[in-house]
Length: 169
View (cartoon, rainbow, N blue to C red):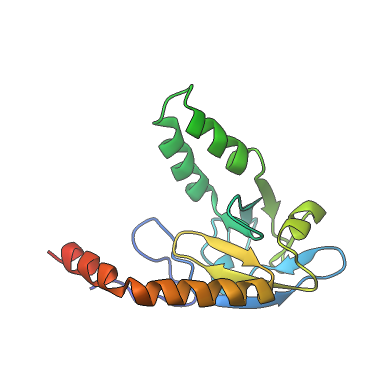
């Protein structure tokens, strides 16, 4: 039986499972507290936790995760070969723009101005758990994204049922 997911649960195997949406304040210096359930899943939690954040190439939000997430991305891209154009594009869009943010003893990270501007963060940020990664959104923009995702998921619910049945075999 798979483990129950909850606050601080490590998920399955070596991969953390970030779940839930958490709204936090962003102060005038750009500091935001990474939600406690997310911090608990980061290597070094409670000591010197670090999170990697970059502007999404898909829209006005930030993408984030731990070093293991970036290692998986790097392995997948490296498999494409050294002179692959798609690899180059993703290397620039992810690794070229990623920032390593150290969390202080209270779990706060300082989000650089350009990242805050990209995600249109003004006083509040929504941290959204998405399995092995999380995103950071402006709450009003997230509301629209969630509505779109729910509508598409409802249209495609049969695909998930088929995939779940296939995985259970």
